[in-house]
Amino acid sequence: MSAPAVQSAPRPLLARPVPIGWRSGTVLLIASVAGLAMFTWPLLMAPSATASSHSPTAPLAFVLILPLVVAIVVAELVDGAIDTKALAMLGVLSAIGAALRPLGAGTAGIETIFFLLVLAGRVFGPGFGFALGATTMFASALITAGVGPWLPFQMMAAAWVGAGAGVLPGRSRSSGGKGELTLLAAYGALAAYAYGALLNLSFWPFAIGPQTELSFVAGAPVLENLHRFVLFTIGTSAAGWDTGRALTTAVAVVLTGPAILSALRRVARRARFTPLA
Image (cartoon, rainbow, N blue to C red; front, top):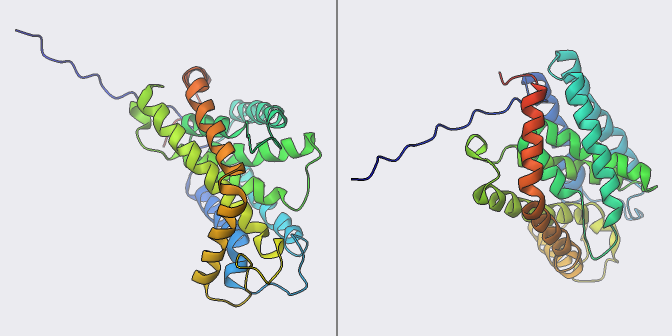
């Protein structure tokens, strides 16, 4: 007679260093809506016929997005929900991500920071993942002299990648096993394609002339322009840069995930961040 199976209790959730309260959640929602509008406005409004790549939109976007991202952190500080240990962790991981990015950027779409955003967002939650995505892109731009009108688009899209990892299911049962790694690798690959599509959308209306089947048509129905945009993305980046980014992220998550997840969770336990409400 075999012994009855013993079911282990679900592991308790680790405290999140940047818990999302009603105020920070509202700011995060506003920032995300503003960012989504920044990406998609060419589908809903006809840009100027004299507009050139990024020049009419990026300065305004820069002014709008950066204060909103900073406001999230400031709101947490005022609310007392983020302490110096969490800020230190955010600074360390941002610096690591900024240092990793030059190792692969510019080569066949290889991107060496997305796996870190995914793993850190998974452990520390959507608020931390959002802030980490934005600060990592900003820090890497400073290091590589990559500050330009494209930066706010990159910051917002990377912030969503980190935040999305923080809301994936099964956090209480996960321990770096195959199931969790498969989930994170699949999410990382999909997020990499979504990141590429969003960045394409930010410049597609101004990228090519008006006389091609892939061109943006000012004033055309949304579905027609979406069809043209999908063709543009497939023809320019999906099979190249985006696939390179997706493969890099998925492979890096699988190879480094067990060690990094274990290390980050150990840090979270010892740091004793602000517990969940």
